Length: 255
Ligand code: F6P
Image 1 (cartoon, rainbow, N blue to C red):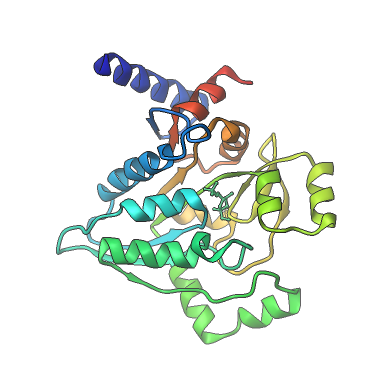
Image 2 (spheres, rainbow, N blue to C red):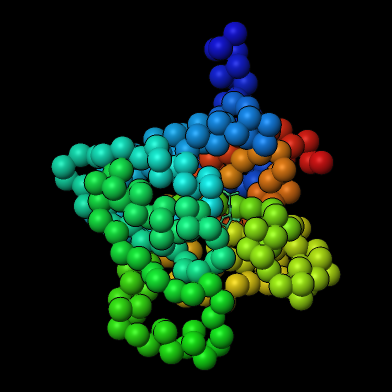
């Protein structure tokens, strides 16, 4: 039974990879919406896949969220010749401390026995503050590291869920509704076509910067995220997706 189940998943992975034009898809059994522990399985699968990339020197940028938090928990120390530096992909997106990129980045570094650098920034930045913070030497230095990241690990969320979780203003909520936002990643909100309809102003990796990274891994699952995953992946860049069966089935059924 297990063998059949596994080969069924491999077929699902192949179909999803073609369907979303990704380079690689890893699917764990189950639906994390129904069984929350499936998120740990995604974390484990992501950490295992990541390990294959973590040879030599790497700067790894990570985003926040509960899914990347479970990747962090599952990381294990690597070999002696590893030289890993973890940085948050972007600062201040309105998450609780345990789900912030900074926290996840330091956990990953501790578990993988790497180093880390953090970005300490307020969530809401006015344009003036943003511009002057960008001139701070400490911020500049971390920014350069972030831009040099060879590996990016990120979550994807449903637009409405994320806007509410961040206590966004009613003006923002209305805008997202009006623009029919369905997905969120890196502080950017996307419509069904994968077009950016809104973004949170914060320092760090911008969407365009992703094209400079060699290995980009999205970790997102649960059937409720199917539409968000499809929308974000339309925007590209198209790399590795770690997800669960719940999301995969819904993505392939197109509903
Ligand atoms: O806020 C950081 C973030 O990575 C978002 O970009 C993403 O939508 C969300 O977290 C995913 O969170 P979770 O894994 O908890 O669904």
